[in-house]
Image (cartoon, rainbow, N blue to C red):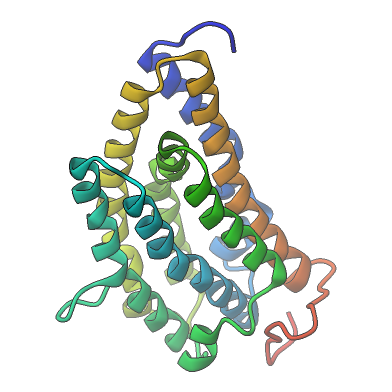
Length: 245
């Protein structure tokens, strides 16, 4: 990039990245939401996704710790509260554990993360490190996958409730609150990057940050597909479903 984009042009390019690279286009997504996964494959997805969910507040806390603007820190604290909850209200991480428990997974086993795939760990850790090490602008831009998450959440809830008798609405309680939270967070982050990315280099960094985050989510599904669908090679030590796919 050599020319400066207008704020609206930058947003258009960001949304185009989501249209092309967001993980709703992944084959595993189609299998999961289309009712073509076994219970064991759904368990594997929920177990591995827990590591991502549990790492998000760690990522957000690291962003807050390096931010010298109290207004941004106040805004970003909402994300910690959404995931960690408080003494009276469970957060998103706890609601995700309700899903894994409803799927028959032992809570202590899930929390230990012993059974997650190496690819999951590598991808999620890379995201946490990215937010810690890159500029604040890039760190905030990487969260912009939330622009696209409300739609995928709607597809997920409808598809899973329609196709899996072992899942009910209570088990999917995590997703009830995420669309408005994600829309709020995405609006803040989008406004921030549109105002702060004012050079070609900054705008390119913002676009690359979103591409990177889309790659993280895609890599997680790649690992699941390789291990539990085709060719079905589960690494030593990773979760093995009781029933065959």
